[in-house]
Length: 129
Image (tube, one colour):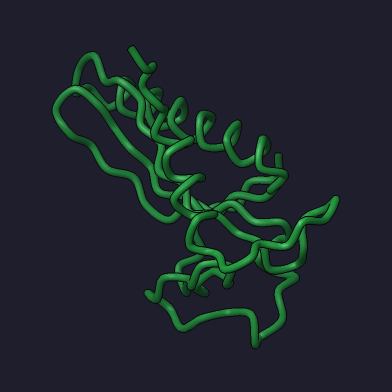
């Protein structure tokens, strides 16, 4: 029987399969990004438990980003469901502040595969791994 794939592995494979002829080079390019969704179990709905579970989900996303060679994270959103929490993050090769204006999208727009991140006016946290 085939072992189950993790969500991060599935997302990474799906994202790379959309790129036509992804370049093969040693380091990340200035516009390389990945959209990552990570989840963590939630044992009870208390505020402290939710905060701890979200932190665990962000750490899981950060490990996936680091494995892809993308050292910067931009947290887009977090959600709470019965029994688990999840986070949506963008992992990128360069800090969002260093992207040129032509690399940034309008607020609220999703990046194209191999594209750049949306620019958010309420500035979610950025994490350097």
